[in-house]
Length: 119
Image (cartoon, rainbow, N blue to C red; front, side, top):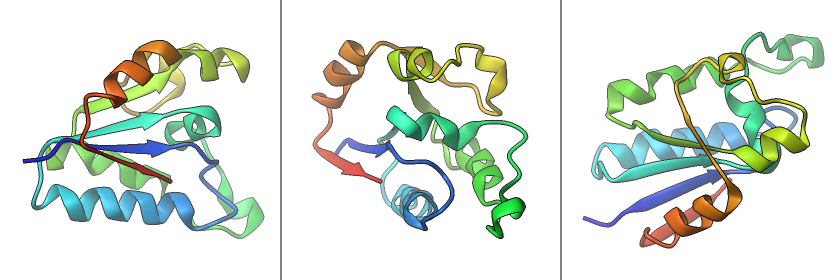
């Protein structure tokens, strides 16, 4: 079974890209359990608490990331450098338990995967 990495690098609202990424993660998890998810750049906003996308007439799909543990997807990584660049470093700002690692370690972990899909 191949190791698949999903990289979320865009903000959660304004386009359907991230929602489609989550749908892809959940769909592929049915046939492959070797999935890791990385949140880098503006992708760190995917799991933030207290989002209010209704203000921009967008649906709040972000809470759907909460089902990931039920699909045995537990390898979630946040880019420490992206958090610092955007002024966040409290892991309690996010509603899922994630590992916070440096950009260098993210690159090393990505090299261990057979397929990388960016959303």
